[in-house]
Length: 229
Image 1 (cartoon, rainbow, N blue to C red):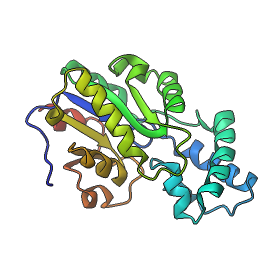
Image 2: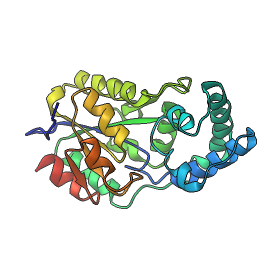
Image 3: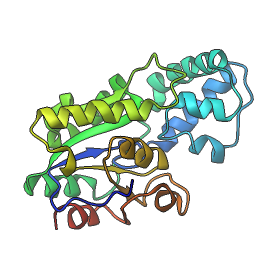
Image 4: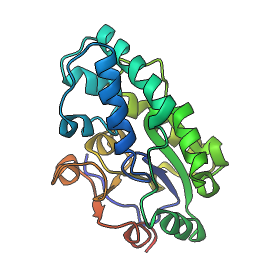
């Protein structure tokens, strides 16, 4: 199925890591500490950076850990992340202005992230991004923290966020995903939702185009032009 931008976008599902915030420093540091504390080999920071965004269970599987070992490593990672890594993070320059522009144009905004929902809500609140979302923190949809081995976790998150958008009055054909990684594109496409990719995140060159993103914004200021022009 070939997707395209709707003639009118009324609701946008926003990824968090790599799209709204530059969370890689804290995540990579906590992954390094967690894997070491759990007794597993620690990949290079370049490899660990690829963990930012996708469901952690899938990323742990990619370095050869079983579901049981992944659960151990993720628990150790989360201990460090809660203690110090969560807020080693910052909002990308231009994001608040871009979100304000979309809101002023009448677009309803929700967050759809593979990050555990209770972490995502703390981060969104910490940076004041809930002010732009439908229902504030109720507009943040994240992963079930117990679903360690669930590779398709982002599809489930998009399903929940899309259902919320529909409950708010959205026509599913007027909903767009915004994200920085191929799993954002694939998860949204699974539900018939097109994705506008963002080039300032953690994707590799060409990743978003290859995955089927309908457009790629090179800076936050371009989101308004792509979504509401």
